[in-house]
Structure formats: C-alpha cells, structure tokens
Length: 499
Ligand code: NAD
Image 1: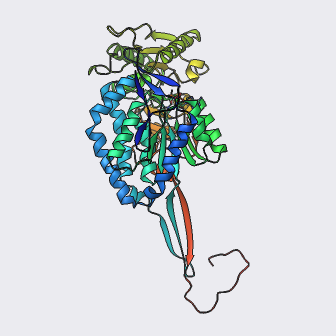
Image 2 (image 1 turned 90 degrees about the horizontal axis):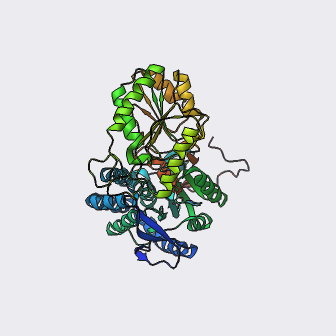
Image 3 (image 1 turned 90 degrees about the vertical axis):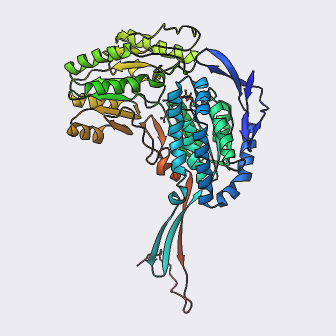
C-alpha cells in the first residue's frame, strides 16, 4: 500500500505515527493509498524547520520572493494535467473541473507575483513640525492552514501563496481524504526556488489540528471546512492569541425573478447545483422561483435539463460530474434526501440507487430535485453538500430576499433577473458575503477577496486579495523626527499633538 508522508524541511519525512487514514478512489470505492495521521511531535519538527528558515526568507527582498512565485506559476501550468489527474483520483471530480480547481488557486499565485507592490507601506511627510510618519508591513513569522477535501489545490494556494510571498513560513494541514496534490504543490514550490522549511505539509486529523492551535510559534491560522469545526478552531486559536480566519459551510440560494432569462438561468443553476457533485461551498443547492408561473416553468425546464445530465468517472470527457468523496458522505446525502421527503418535500427526481456500470462500488449519486421545500425544514436549514437541488417557492421578491437573509449560512447567493432595480435592492439588503447578479457562482477573482457572513465565516478577514496580504502581515507605524540641532525643544507633559 502506498503511504503518503509529510513534507517537512524540503523533503518527504517518514512519519513516526502509527495511525493511518485510508485514501479512497471514489470512482471505484477502493482504498488506493494511506496517509499518515501525524502526532504533535511531527508538527514540532515542521515548526522548528519553519523557524530556522523564515528569517532569511523574510530578509530577502520582495522582488526576489516574487520571482519564486513566477517560477511556481509556470511550473504549475506545465504540470496542470498531472495535477488534475492526481486531484480527480482522490476527489472524484471530473478532469476539466480539477483543472478549474487548480486554476483558481493559480490565480492567487499570480496575484502574489505582485507582492513588491502590494507590500508597499504608507508615508506622510510633515505630519507635524519636522515629523514624518510611515508604516510598513512585516511578516507575522509562521502561519498555518487547515483545508477541506473539496478544493485540494485551490484552497491551499489561497493560503500559502500570499503567506509565503509576504515573507512567512507556512505549515499546511490538508484534508486527510485527498492529501497528494498539496504535497506535489510543495515539491513544485521547492523546484521553483523556495527555500526548504518555508512550505511544509503535515498530514493528520484533530490531533495535529489541536497541536497547531496550541503551538505558540504559529501566529496565524487560516481554516476552511464545515461550520462547527470552523467555530471550534476559531475559538481555540483565538483564545491562544492567534490571528484566525475560519471559513465554514454554506447553503447558497438562487433567486429566479419572473423576468429572468429562464433558459440561461436553468443552464447556470444546473451547473452550479450539480457540478462537482454539489460538493462546493459556492454550489447553488437552493433555487427560489418568484411567483407561481415562474415556479412551474422553471421546474419543467429543470426536469428536462436534469434528464440530460451524465454522471461518470472523472476521466469521462462527457460526464458532467463524478462520484462524491466517500461512502459515508454518500450515505449522509441519502439520509438528507429521505429527511426532506419525511418533512413533506416533494421528491421530483430521486438520485438514490444509481449505479454506474463497471463501477458499482463507486460513490455515485444521480441528481436529485426536491420541490415545495419549506424554510422550517431541517433538510433546508442544514448543508447537504451533494447533488441535491431544493426548490423553495416564494410569492414576492421580498419573501425571496428573506430566505438567504434569514438562513444560518451566508456564503454566496445569486439573483437571476433583467431588472436592475430589483438586483440593486437585492445586493444592498441580502445578508450574504458574495452576491452574483446573473452569475451563479460568484467566487471573487484573486485580486478581490473571498468570505461569507454569519455561520459561513468566523474572524474578520477574507481569504486572498488585499485581505490575504493584511492577514499574513503586521503593520508597524513609525513616527520620526530628526532634530536639526541647536536648542532643546520644549519639554512637554501633555500627550503629544501635532498642533
Ligand atoms: P471538515 O470540517 O470535515 O474538515 C476540514 C478540515 O478540518 C480538515 O483538514 C479536517 O482534517 C479538519 N477537521 C475535521 N474534524 C476536525 C475536528 N474535530 N477538529 C479539528 N479539525 C478537524 O470539512 P470537509 O468535509 O473537508 O469540507 C467540506 C466543508 O467545507 C463543507 O461544509 C463546505 O461548505 C466547507 N467549505 C467552505 C468553504 C468556504 O470558503 N466557506 C470552502 C470550501 C469548503
């Protein structure tokens, strides 16, 4: 059995831990490798390597650090196919979607290539008599990232690209379900010229996460995963005095107004609800048609669209999506479908019981469509994270607006309309962090930043963009005066003012 080891100090490190986690091939349902579940002493080794390497890396001028990012960008591009295959083999998403996963992370590496410009401070000449004030951004030292299974390339890059470009060392604890791509990215970073010890990968589960949260040398932790864990990680890390940004789960709504371009909206909703088997935090698992006529027309078009969807193995170029990540997750999704039925939803299309010929043990689910879902149902209030689309009917725009606004999650939302006035009111009032207007998956580009509201995000800084730079740096502000000699200035016992 292939064992996936840690990557510490620029090399693979056989773990001392005897605990192992199974890494499945979701298409066949078979265990294809095992990952070491590290113990806290291995985190200590990563921290020691990071501490030894970080001062020299921080002292290197930002232009030279940027050149490493340029090299890394080129290397990831030239290894795109290899990375996508590796990603699909452990996650299950189709190859084209794996390339999208890698590309959205690569966009952040590209943003980090501009780090010399992004790190420039501010300067005020003559803030007082003979006094200048300036600020500079300095790296925080060592940061860590804890990432989920559903974007094994993009989310690690959201974190480590700005962190290391800012002059920090980084310790990545990837999802134990698909650990290979993060290790490969760290290898490529070494090839790109990153010094050993600046990017370390330590595999594991709660044990090593707790060790990260309690280690005083780690000054900032970025987390992406489900909300209960995000809240726990946020609380424990923050109480230990760390900077924390913790992104959680989601239940994103797509509002369909009566004037929407229905064919376009249906095409967008199908891709956003079922792409990657619904295992995206920016998926669109709830659709809210406004008015009876919209609901009837939308449902008919969705049914036709779903009938044309193809579930297949990741290498099938015609497949719209592949298997879900594990048999446990498949069972969890099936339970939610049953719960929705028991709660009184109408099961329009049932995706359970689907088997792909030749891959009968794979974790496949066909698309499910539920109608007449109500806001007091548990199956509506919780995140299902599978190929399941729930329709919640609304009579008015105001009612439709209230659903994503009142929901416990506030990650993404979309409105489909041709009416600018409604779109504008919607954006201004909806309590959700990322809004799409006729855009089903409004993941912001790398030079803006990503973050949800309510139980979708704990902490106060978003991922990547300028927030990424802010999160991984500390501002130091200097007030300076160069006396011109001569008489001693007046002594003052009053708080200094610039008057
Ligand atoms: P998860 O919460 O199970 O795991 C995330 C990370 O936390 C993993 O590295 C895991 O090892 C670790 N972990 C798990 N249990 C832990 C515990 N008890 N204590 C400490 N650490 C623990 O999430 P997942 O299933 O890998 O990913 C899917 C979830 O991530 C979904 O809820 C999805 O919405 C969310 N997600 C959110 C965003 C976002 O930006 N908001 C992006 C992607 C995924």
